[in-house]
Image (cartoon, rainbow, N blue to C red; front, side, top):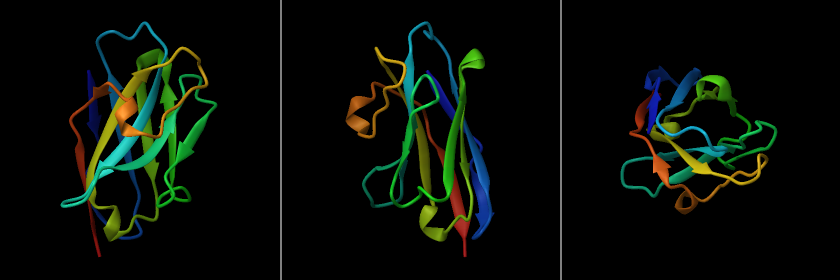
Length: 125
């Protein structure tokens, strides 16, 4: 099970840090991904990080403004967002997928089997 948290209302130009907590079966390596979905739009890739934490990739629309980190010891991950824009308004989801290799990550949402409930981020202009 995954739980995203930390969303809220923030002014444009502000920052926000989202958290993702993984519970349940956590004995396997897993990559983590962040996705978002704005009203009336398709789900969009935000970023992903490998189990090792050494491999990661970000979506084109956010890559200069976000960073992902993770702590495997307590099965948590964070999405740090800066210079937020109104177009960043969306529900943000974290997802997990078991990976054989510690450096694997996935940028396509269909590759993820485990999803949490999202957290709403609203950026006011």
